[in-house]
Length: 174
Image (cartoon, rainbow, N blue to C red; front, side):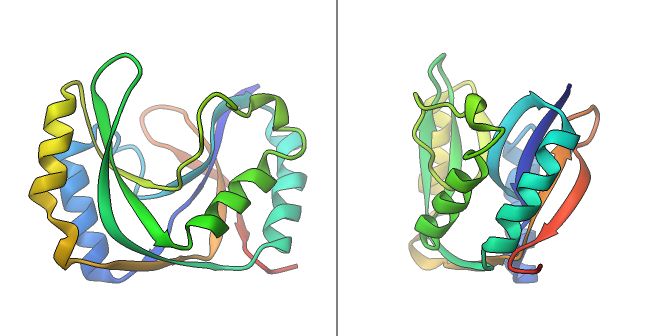
């Protein structure tokens, strides 16, 4: 078994990508390991051979997902601290549906039913939740809109030091 996840690296305007990655470089300890992304299947031990065919089938049945983000949200962690998420308004339901479809088959036993899925891009993490709340205020997304599109999903391995792609699946392509 290998530690795997399924992510989507969004297509973004270059200025938005630079802004997000600059925030992540300062505030997200994972920024050097993986680029800005939506996690669709959270890290789990699974066999790439068992997962690949199902992921391909889900990708073929899905369509590219445009999204719009107008807000950041501080989310507390169970053990203390928290994260800052960029949460889409438009596209949120479609991303959640894609997440659900990816967990319908062999990955079903790995679904965390105790944690509701919120489509998001993580831009910060801190052991101090108040720092997360402060960053949300500092970012002031009231005057910024981030638009993008999910065109593909990636099966990735979580080996150190970087997250590496095992396979890429284009949405809506047979």
